[in-house]
Image (cartoon, one colour):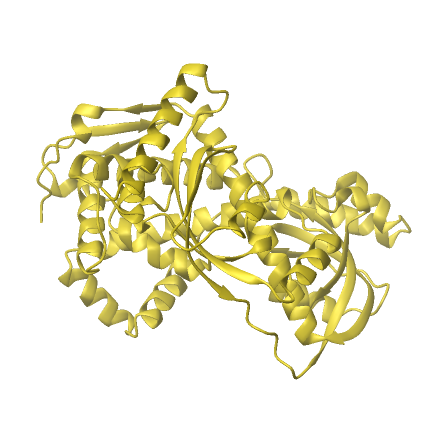
Length: 440
C-alpha cells in the first residue's frame, strides 16, 4: 500500500497549486467545481511543476502540452472534490500535521527543513503554496483511509488462501492504460471508449509508441504521467478478473482490452520475479482480541456532540448494558457494527498507537474510557490476549493489507467516479488550451 509519505512526495507535482492571485493582475477561471473554482494561474503553476519534475528524469516522456494540461486540470478538479468531501466528513489537518509532513519530505530527500525551503525557492515554488498542497494531500489520504475503514474488509479465509498461493508464488510488475467510462454509460460512450482503447493497443503493438508513452498520452488513470506503472504485485493483489490470465503471460505481453467498473483497460506484464521467502527466525508478539464502538465526527456531528454520545454509551455499559448490543445499535464502524463491534485478533499497532495503548492499559473484560483517533471517538473492550509467532503474523498482516489495497483500488475508483458524477463541474476548454504568464 502506498505510504502517506510517498503520496506527499507525489504531491510535489502539484506544489503551488494555490498560486497567489495577487501575483497575477488578470486571472481566469478554467474550471468551476461545485462552489469552488480552479484558476488559470493554478493550472499554469501545476503544469510547470509537472514539467519541471519530469525534466529531471531522462526516461520520462510527457504527452503533448494540450493533453498534459487537461490531465493536470483533471487532477486539480479531483483534489478539489476530495478535499471538500474530507471537510464535509469532519476531517481536519492541523498546522502541526503539515509541519510533520514537511519534516518527512525533507528527511526523505536528505535535507533539513530549511534546506528544503531553499530548494523549493530555487525551483520557483512558493513555500506557502507547497504547504497548502501538502495539507490537501493529507486530507485526501485521510479521506481514503476512512473510506477503507468503513467500506473494505478482508476475511481470514481470504488471507489463508493467499498465503497458500504465495508459498511458491510469483510476483508481477504491471502497468496499465485506462479509458474511463462514466457511471451508466450510453451505448455510444461505450463504443467510443472501446474504439479508443483498441486504437491505443494497435499503436503499441505496431511499435509506433511504447506502453509507458501511450499511458502518459492516452490513459485516464491517476498514474498516467507515471507511465501507468502499477509496481510489483503478487497474485492476491491483482483483480480476480484477470489474475489467472496474467500468470500465463510472457514479459512485455499486453492483456486486453478488459471492460471493468471504471472503463476499458490494457494491462502490460513488465517483468516477473520469485516471491521472497519469509525470514527463518520466528519472533513472538502480543495480540489482542477486542470489540469497539465508534462515533464519527462529521459535517452533521460536531466533536462535542460525538464526545457527548460516546460518553452516554460508555455510561450505559457501565450501568450493565451489553457492550456487543450497544455496538450493534450505535457504532458507526460499518465493518464491525453487525458483529457487535468485534475486531477479532490483531497486533498491538494494527489500528494505530493510540488504540493499542488503550488496550495495553486494560484487563481482559474491561472497557476503556472514551478516547479519540483520526476515525472519531471510541470505547473499546478487551476480550483476550495471546502470544503469537510474529513472523507469520507479519506475513499475514502484509497479505491482508495487499488484499485490502487491491479491493480498495477497485472500490475507490468507483467512489471517485461517483463523486465526480454527482458534482457540478464546468470545464472552460478555451482557457485550458492557452496558458498565461505566471507572475514571479
